[in-house]
Length: 359
Image (cartoon, rainbow, N blue to C red; front, top):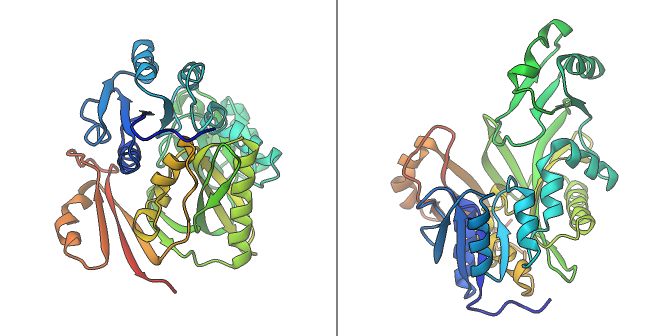
């Protein structure tokens, strides 16, 4: 694959903050961007060259996107697979649609990871109250019930602890009567994630792992370096690179891992896109995850993933946005706001990264 020439146009499906940061990175490298999103004046549209206001599966919108760009990417994993495949008939679509298929269904995702030799939490498919009761019995009455499709930041989940069969009545219907998965609890000590990239030539590069803290199912803080054993970091990195090769992947991926008491890791989930836990790279690395993604999909050499600083990244969620002015006055802090005006509870409004001398 020859490199996409500066001045070419990249199509981005999805206009949230990740699309916004991808558009900003693309502009730095001399590329134009067209964003497709149903919400007018979405965060990405504020910095892109153009927005197509259309649903993600709108045939006319997709056709227009295809007519205006040379290459297509996306900012979130719930893009309709058929939309990505239709665009792929005439344009390179990266990451490949197969990665979407693997990530959109939690059962398929875990089966793929296991087939790749990567351990996960134990899991059972659930398609009725009866199968839920059976699965809970296998897992000692405890686990996390999740919708297999959609759901993020803690949505579409129900936790069971020491539950009996009498606690499963009506649960399947209450979850929407959709395919579900029950995941057994894992006695992990912390969670880390690895953000890595692969280009069309098979070259791979990984950023340092971050140690993550969640609140209410939403990522609150990522710390780099992660306070885990070297063997843990090596295992997580190796597993992430294995996933990239197994998917013949092009672009940036984020993979979350649970760290067990003995320092080993099991994969929690993968995201075929730039990842919230990699936002720190824009402040502590010469090449951010967003630029790395643009480099990978456009056929440019991958950038150096070494960090020049230690750092802590925190999301600004909901009313946390009120702290922006105070944070902007803090030395050694990089502030990034997403251009959203409605600070609803649980909504990511921006993030900031405190950098410090590398240890």
